[in-house]
Image 1 (tube, rainbow, N blue to C red):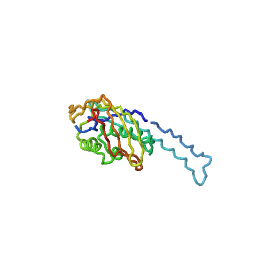
Image 2: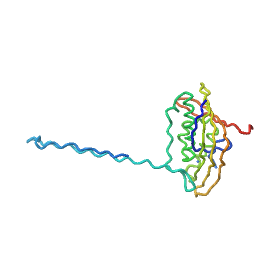
Image 3: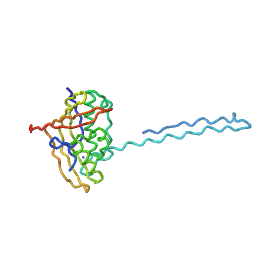
Image 4: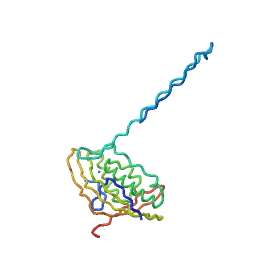
Length: 219
């Protein structure tokens, strides 16, 4: 049984995914000029050109989390770990953690391209509660803040045609701001663990086919 924990920022509501309303500088040494004594009386030998110094590497902009003052800035795209590319139980665990990181990224930036690459359109909640709303919100100027979630991968089953990962999560409240900075809505925190599963398929890499949530009230 796997019990890994990953802290990310996502928006969940009643078990469903929700977004509608988140150097160094090179120091080149000049070549030695040709000695004047070696200059032929017929042909002068030119000195070697001085190589240009390497350009100074630009510092990586500091990521700024979203707040009441504005949306997240310079938010880095999560890099898929090598383990998440493996067709194994360990790969399922790593991919599940990475998927939540991509949800985090989509909520904060409204950039859904990385998430679409690892999501099948058959995942109804993924499409209607994250991807489509983010695409619709892009360019409107609003943003999400808060919503930090603790995600634990509880199990992984790797079988041909029916691979599954299980997870539980807790989440802080999420604040949704309009383009003019007004608080538009508040998504309540989840303080009791909620459980869910990803149905996965491996085709030159993992992708989510469907997501299901377990109602804590058993309804």
